[in-house]
Structure formats: C-alpha cells, structure tokens
Image (tube, helix red, strand yellow):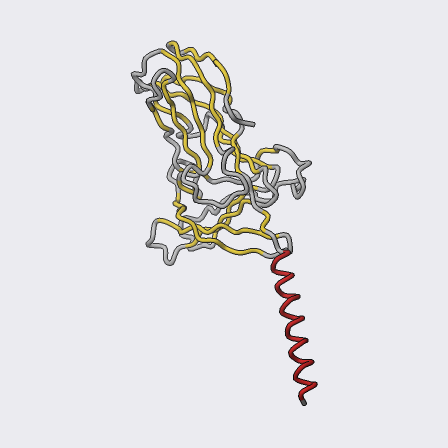
Length: 247
C-alpha cells in the first residue's frame, strides 16, 4: 500500500511538472501597433467657409501576433460595447483581456461599429509646442486592407480580418483586428479624416498621429506608436519640412 501511494505521489509530481512546463512554454504572441508616415496632405476649403487639413493615415501591425478586439453589450439599449483584447500564444491558445476601450455604432456614413479613439491626431506649433488642432475623427473600424510586409512570420498572404460588424442592433460579440504584416488605411477623402484649421495663421507646424494613444492595449513595443511630419502652412499651400518617427 505504501509503495502504491509513493508511486501515485511521484506520478502526481511528474504530471504537475509537465503542466507547469507546458504553461511556461506558452508565450504570448503580441501585436505591435505602429504608424506609417502621414501622406496625401492637402487643404480643403469647404462651402461653409472652413479650412480643413486633410491627410491619409495608416496603422500597421508589425508584431508577432494578431491584434484582435471583441465588442459585446448586454442589451441593445446600451449605445456602447465593452471591448476585450484577445491575446494569442505560441501553443495555439489565447486569453481575453478586458480593456477600457469601447465600440459605438458610427453615424458617419460608414454604417458599422467603431473602436473609439484608437488613433489620435494633433497639430502643434513648432515654435512653442502649443496644440492648435485635433483630429475630427474619433472612431476606427480597422481590418486588413493595406499590405505592409507579408514576409513577416505569421503574416497571412490574403486578408484575414475583412471588416467590422455592421448591424446597429447587434449585441455582439463583434470582432475587429489587424493581422501581422497588414495595415488599415484611412484615406484623406474619408469623412472626418481632417483637422480643422479655420483661422489658423501661416507658419510652421507638426502634424502628429498616435496609435493606441490611451495605452489601452497590450503590445510588444509601446515606443513606436506615433509618427510626425513637420510642415509649413502658407495660405492653401503645404510644404513638407521633414519627417520624424514613422514607417
């Protein structure tokens, strides 16, 4: 009997060690959000007299894992969905991490759910660092629509994430995401893809875009989330002075 108990004890220890070894080997495969250099800068003069600084912004995932978010709400009377980030590991598993982000159903003509404030745009004076404008766009429905680099390990050769939930009456769960090596492009013609510069004087400014401005999401690197471009505004003319960080 004693010998049998000892064998069972040894077997239990071995099994426990095997489980711990498996858990230790299952490392997170984290995404890494970054911004490409801003492009297509131009000024739009609207019929109602506004001046809008328009530009194209592209957010990319250059990490080793997918950037995947899930939205959910308890009932359709709630206007917002809570958002969790799904973090994958190299053993084929995943875990869902709650975040402070929310999704809302956009009324900007896109008719789909957006993650609020995924990106942040700002215009800053070069001489004194004062912020003189912020982006009109607040919601982002991101998916694989821009090829960045398909040679990255784990990058799918065709889009994996192909859109966002489009039903205003949806409870969820709704998925949105960016694959490794892919990006999401917000062209300068899109609604709200601008900074209002009505009344702004000519001068030198820095246009800045930041991904995950509020640090809601888990990434492998947090120091490459922004991109900047220095410009000179003169009437309706834009001169590029130089680029800062960006891909």
